[in-house]
Length: 168
Image 1 (cartoon, rainbow, N blue to C red):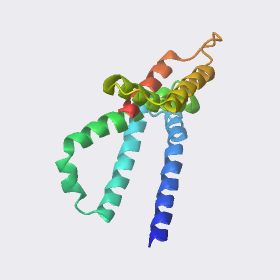
Image 2: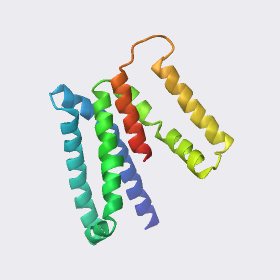
Image 3: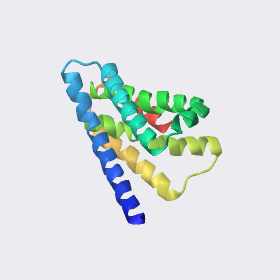
């Protein structure tokens, strides 16, 4: 039983990683075909919602009642962390490469570390600070900010919006 549960978990993790990894190129392809970033986000959200409803219904039939009980949290999470992050990210990839937009969005853990430090007054450990510093340094190097090269400021702003939404 434990072995089959582990295999199922690994299968879900791989499927999740593959579908998430395909979202950037999917967005670029839709926008190249004339879709707006908002339309691409809506298509992705609708598809994801349909899959989740089907999966939740198969796994736990009482999911709808529990969703209603926690409606405020679900709506806030859905609007900010899911729809907001996707909308900002898709707008970012309409101005930047997929890799650069993801790099900026993945600064979200650095924001979380900073937020916890500022609000809870709990200083992170040295390893955490070193990791955050390395992430920020790597971002500056990849953006090549000191070379005078042109970076699309609007794309960077959208990507940082995705960062904030993902951190939420």
